[in-house]
Length: 336
Image (cartoon, rainbow, N blue to C red):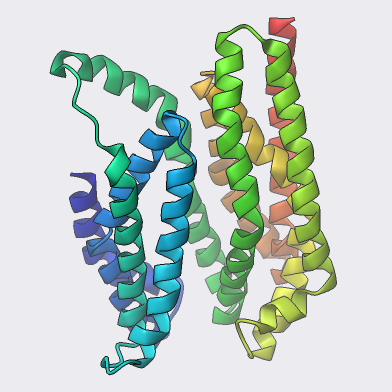
């Protein structure tokens, strides 16, 4: 049901959504073509996500990992074939990229579904279980949905400067994904560890898990900081030859790179509180970071100038971290 609702809404609003970030009719057309295909056929993504969480809840991290890898490889192989029309296939352009994406998602879903289907429990258990699932899942739902809204908000702000500024932000998120994959995996792994130990009243182990995960996360993100500070123009050149985009992006990468270290804690604290069942604190941290700070600060800094806009990232991460530390200290005092 969620997939159908998502697909219908996406098909209707896709052109308007594209126009929020650019005035180029060619770009709007390509965004609409790509977006409608990936949204209409996103059932693979929906099914893969559900089955992956079922397997992870049962302690099986290997199968989802294999599914993700094979799905990504499928996407990579199909991209040039469908986009440029190799092996006797008609060139599909941007539509080919979309088809390759959804095909990879469906392949991943087929892999995890082999071990993700279980006999349904008594239907009388549904209301109570659904309520509990959504209560604990609200922080993650907010985190995923707020991400989309704050990116849209930042794009709207940057669109007031130029299309190149919007492109620079998009290129940042392309590179950010590479550095955030290990951090995201680390956060996924600490949830069951913290949950099990909290339930067993082993608060010391919860604190140790948090400490180790933050240190490991900072070590990983320090590499990202070095790259963003030392070779920003080279990183941007991988995706674009537009010198204006590279100039804007170089300044942006310098500012944003500073935010990577505090970003570890601003993202890990919500995960920790979700793991111990404190959905309220987790939701507050997520909403403060994405809705209360990111977009309003972005707007305020943009009034000074484009270069100052990028200060939004380090300031937001530092303020969110401060709030997270406050909540965490209250948790420590309460459990001592």
